[in-house]
Length: 461
Image (cartoon, rainbow, N blue to C red; front, side):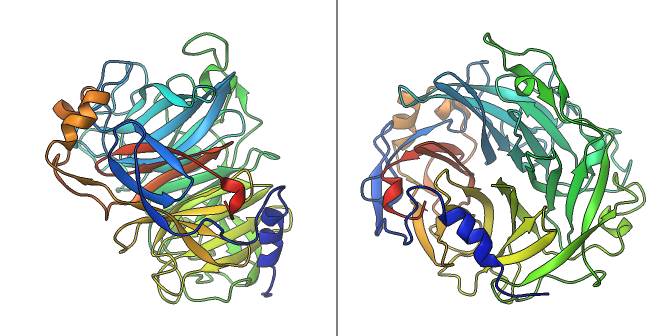
């Protein structure tokens, strides 16, 4: 074990062109949504945003937008248009089902994904549609280097214990401009998945587990991503722009070298670094217990959440890890085979329960809060380990607001899942993802997606 290596990861981030060494954005204050005119978010001066994809809003496939928006990523590019894949953390009976012919796993379940197309030239959303269905509690996931999204089921149950005959707790691949095929990648493990990140140099998939105790895993596919058929629309790029992740590989759990079952849930100094080894998971589909239990030397984390790859490093979050149980950010270096405590929250005012994580093109880290704070915030993290609030959820729907939203986004009022009047400021942020000058993010409930832009180079994001 060593101390001080966290600076290497921060140095990599801070070395980007145009990176500011301080937060720089100033205080946040309520701003009007460019689409509805409602004051939904608090942002620093100079930033603007638009909403889209409200729960109930009619999509291009004629279906209402499902609720409980969660993890999301920019996964594909075609000319001036980008495709985002968005998770919906749903169980059976929660609002509108994620339903798409040819893209269902279990027809009785409601979870899945929707895809959103955004035009960079016009600066607006173009359409959305259902891309995966029949899954449970699709929480987070991660984009692939070849242009698709890995969507994760955050659920677990005993093997073959369901009356419908389906087992859940898998990951699924969803192409950026097409629909998924509803087939789980079984060898990547069956557990309470949260998020993934892929090393572009090796195509190895890294996975977090939202449980306590939990492991941190890597899935080594049996070969390079394989060709896949063309998909929705014209211009190519369907089904992950020509490739997909292969099933049939091997799952491993992270082990701290020389310290079997090392408990990493407690407090550590920022910069504490451990050497890493990997142990094969003997029961990846958890047919005889938990996958974690079949890797007896695996390191112990608490509630693994967000995961993100940047410059060959894998960043991941423990939402309630640390001495204060307020959250930790770890970074794994596949080349050095080390894992480092990058940041640990010691005060709820800094960050309370980080969940999804993303890194901007300029090298800034943003964390989505899902703890006890109200209003919920998106928090920036600087290279010096300082945090600052970048955005606050200020969604309070007053009488008549749902009509205003429905005038812009038809279907919202008729298909809204939550009470159309109420205070939603304590609902979690999720799905933060950057592309160029845009930050996209979700507020899970009442369920809405935002596109945010402004003077990024003025600060640390």
